[in-house]
Image 1 (cartoon, rainbow, N blue to C red):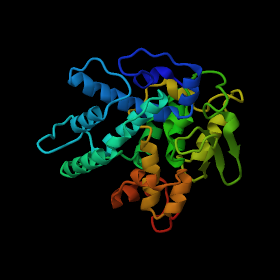
Image 2 (image 1 turned 180 degrees about the vertical axis):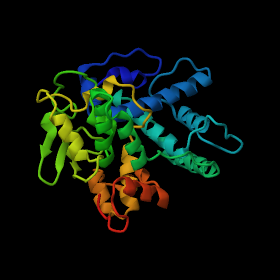
Image 3 (image 1 turned 120 degrees about the horizontal axis):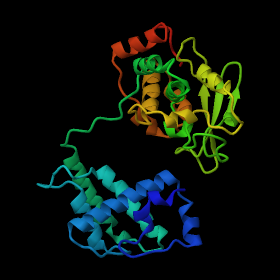
Image 4 (image 1 turned 120 degrees about the vertical axis):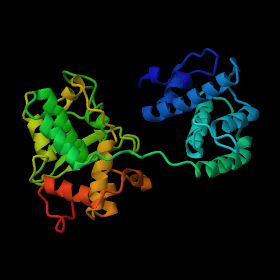
Length: 327
């Protein structure tokens, strides 16, 4: 866990603090991604205090400060500038402030809950009048095909990027879960996808993923890849990298980290894979299983595709539109 990613959360406002062993033990009860989210909330609160020219503050926060923060951050009547955040985001920030108090063993002013609930409801009504921001853009088959063609023959590093994209798309995986910061040699146990985490069968290849965002503590999730008759076959992409000289604990896609990366979101591949499957009629339960989702959070990854986008995708894969029901 990188403590440098959460300095605001580790501090108590403007007071100097030292992390003791019990504190670090509490900290490890959260996933790093969640702590980074909490840190963003505390950082936002710090911006609020700075805007009010209150240079000294500490925990616990008072009810009045909570009310003022919600008013400052959320939208209201005649208070709709571009720096405002949605009621949904503000709710998450308040969860972060509660976790901040919990970590430092300070009492959060829970008596604010009834009034804050009404304030968030009012803010949400104003949010409804604002055009929504564009969602995560799906990475489509045509994008995958163009990337594959562009990088083929440009060396081992470029081809590692190409194969990584293929696996991320069909596996509906975040790029961070398929890569590791180490460029050479073995990586620590369960800290990233290695050659040891690949199981190959006749009809499928399975990848073991550790510390996934949707996993329970200690749970190992599995990415299921099936072969397809296309140059964009994920099983072939894995096979190519297993065939390269490496040690058992080496990262499969280490070369990705040494190449200039196309400006792709780590979520773009999950969005593209889920959206295409939904567009061709794959059942929701199957999509949730393939994406390793157990709740309705899958909905944020499914974007509508036009008939042309679907037809083009299946044409590139050489799959007839009417016959295809499972990818």
